[in-house]
Length: 358
Picture 1 (cartoon, rainbow, N blue to C red):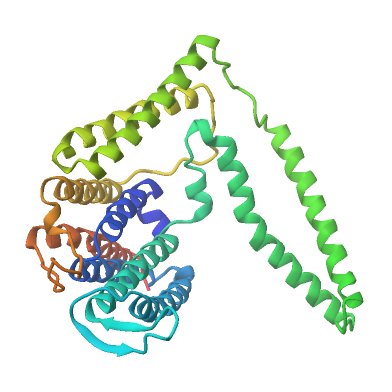
Picture 2: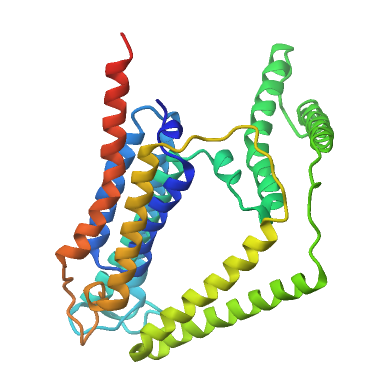
């Protein structure tokens, strides 16, 4: 059983939302480390049978590289703080001045949040096939989804074609010594790309791509435009209220919800006018429901903490705050939900191994 057969892409999207929210909303290293451990457990379960799991190590190396760059950059360029570790000559541009513990901790946690985000999306990349994910685009974006799917498939296809052309030329004794020697490789590649583009256009036309679209009346288009404008206005107002008026955080949250609801209605009403057919429908299993509920529970629980108890998540090493992070068991327990897909995957793999005869 592969990972694609185990969980539906929509269920993985719920898991992605639940994992991304903590990484974006806090710099507390205790919570970020809990997210990283949970994501690592999920990856280890995915990597048992997924051939694309090798890309995870590349994300780890790239994230570690960015982390090592972030720490000295922030430490040497930010001279605020009360706990001075050492001083550099003031005549040195940019980095001259006091080097503080608070700046080091700020750079450390900032890089930690960055590498956590990278690992989350690396795990999601291993779990979900991009082509299947793009086919889940809503009706109002189906043309964008098709174009994105073609673009995603274009690069690996052209790379494979380039490799086959190069191997064929090497068999004929062709060697690349300069720019002119590249023509026997580039010209067949361009011809192949044009032929595939023509074949794709003909196949899309034969399947009626772009048809079966119900045209909206002027009144309906006006309603969609007004709903989008009102939704954007409520979103901006809600963000402003939450940012500048903390005492009215509940009102700002309601405004954000109202704006998203208006925009969702407009997009849904536009999308339902585009009739789409699917060659293959993915089954929805009990494990998909479990993962979806876990993702929604984790995301909603974290949002509730952000609204009701934001001080649990706050971490800022500069005065008047403490440079040492605090940990709340409830918030930490919510983050443990991110590791449950790994346990479900491991159990599913073990059951399939028992059911499959050697």
